[in-house]
Amino acid sequence: MEIRSVDLNLLPVLDALLRHRSVSVAARELDMSQSALSSALARLRALLGDELLVRTGRGMLPTARGSELAAPVAAILAQVRDQVLSTGGFVPAQATRRFTLCLSDVGSYVLWPRIVQTVRAQAPRVRLRLRTLAQPAIPPALESAEVDLAVGAYPGLPGSLFQRRLFDRQYVGLVRAGHPLAGQRLTLRQFAAASHVVVRMSSGIQERIDEALGRQGLAREDVLEMPSYLMLPPLLLAGDAFAVIPGQLADAFCQHGPFVPMVLPLALPASTIRQHWHRRFHEDAGNVWLRDTIAGLFGDAAP
Image 1 (cartoon, rainbow, N blue to C red):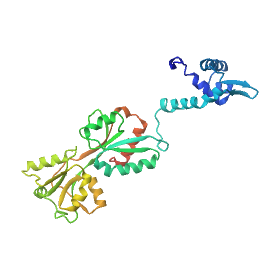
Image 2 (image 1 turned 90 degrees about the vertical axis):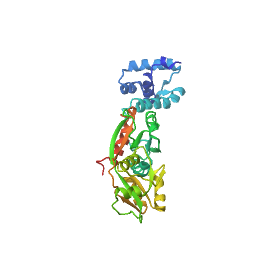
Image 3 (image 1 turned 90 degrees about the horizontal axis):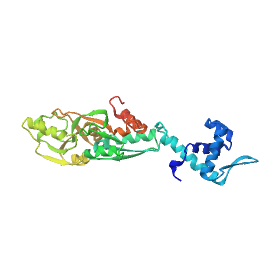
Image 4 (image 1 turned 60 degrees about the horizontal axis):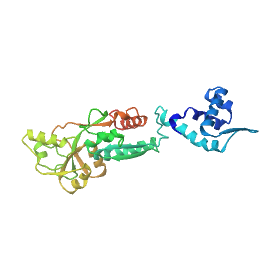
């Protein structure tokens, strides 16, 4: 039997009859006349080759075939209501959805724990997954729904993505407690002469530092490059290295170790932290809820 030849309007009729076992009650629920409902039942019997319900001394009772169909028909109609005809409402306390977020290593260290804590408090059955992707891989991941939301400083993402500003991130220096420069007001020459640990990210902040020093005829000569900010703490503790890192990450490191933040002797542009998502999910209620939750945590107006 081809599904295209089936009148799917008959499914609510069958569901109502199997639940109520009464033509009159089912007709009232479906706002149909009894004659129209009886006609629909006759078509169902012809379509499925079974009586489905028969009259007995105890009223209408389902046949064996009718009993078998009750649960799958009800499930099909529930899926159509909830997944096809739903207006997209999202109830956090009841949701069982999984969200995948893309964050940088800084975001993973600073933002991710608070996101997890808040989401679990509001939506305990929601599952979370964290991804770290290179910037060029983020747009296709958002388009394909491999990632629901990208949060961070990603200045190279295309303008076709939706975005929402959260806050501006300033940069500071960080050294171990007891470092020869700790607590000093640095000159530009002292800064350039220090032993530096450099992490080059998509923000381009290290390149800005090199350009600013170059305009003054200076350069950082003693430089050790590393791929991640999260590798910095043991290296800073082991020697007299100096690192330029995001201020929020410096605060987090200082909570867990003997580090001293330093005011930089040069002006650096702030990095703007934004949420990014694809237009396919702009109206998706779950995505909207997640974006609003994160904005409530980290937006400029957040506590």
